[in-house]
Length: 542
Image (cartoon, rainbow, N blue to C red; front, side):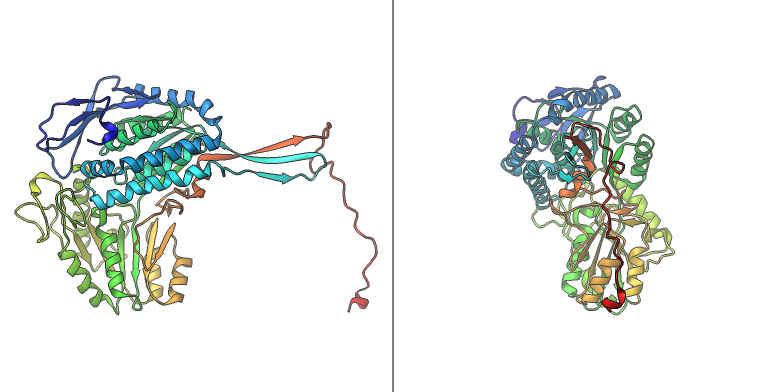
């Protein structure tokens, strides 16, 4: 059990064969541990071992959400008036505590969502980096002094917080993404109601306790658990009720559009980080080994359960056969299994049974579209498994890696996101055709090109319609100081991370300070500057 959870907790009986305790989890509202108002609960189950229950958590009601919003609203006045450098210091404390607990949190996250140990380590590090980056922003929450057009008057601009923010994130990045959202939110002086991902409540609980241990005042971040259709919907409903001033959501495009509608009709700011069908182009001049490695990782890292995972692999026809031979060698040899027991795994189980079910339905549609399957047999079983699978398939939720070729623009699978270990492959005639195929997607999150032709690289980064582009690197990957987000069906233009995210959690306040002791009206009381009446002798100048 992670050290941050060792004290002050109850445990429940379970049939765990792991000998690890099953935690009784709570909401954290105004700094207090709370059960659901109707006592209802749900379980968090290890997707690599269905007999391993990590914890039992509140299935939050509307009353619980209202209580959390009320606590955030009450805390807002004091927190927003706390000096920004002090807010930054608390955020810095969070980063240092995350460092202290990193090893425990990595094991916990891997156990709860099935992500490999190595990937979980990188994600916790991203949360640490976010804290350390925004600690210093507490001393750089800059406004501007602006010169007035009138005498004895000063003009200023300030960043002001929005108010209570509703935070809803998916379970595929349960530590990095909530920190991307909440750290800049509280840095700007906002307070938060955070709904944990349904499949990662214990990790969220541990992270929230770390935040409070770092010195965060009660009510600034309030954690509630539950389903998207329950607790999540109650947070969105609160926008219509005038109780929420900002929504930040990471999830599906379908749900994001509905949230955008609610926020739009209430003139409430929303940040929507949604799905992707991310293109990766490989041109003849590319370093083939590097391109194969990048495409392989982008396709199957995290079992393809990333919004930035590779969607359409677009191969120039001149290198198609050579590339596919090398690519399929790696796919066939993909090591799959529980990384807490086996080293070197590329990916582990699906995030949950729901994600597994949705994935299987999606690949059925891909095959009905007419795409030709080169590899993949759906769910891994002990009777039907890839050669490099490790462990007992009956205990977890594991999927084969899938590869589909002969995909064209006429097929639905060319346009639709597949959230799982599957890649669709498209053949391009030349660079212009490849660029067209890359831009034909309704999404615009991430993109990549492998080429050593500088003009091709230049044209791709200039002409692609996406929020992010990699040159000679995969479609996945983010850093705490670089903006993250997409366009088209991938988001509404807001960004996570870096200094740019501050725009999403603050508004500009213009202040007009009149020192003259009299009313001065801009544009009306400004003295006109007389121009010279002497005519210019153009002949002389010539």
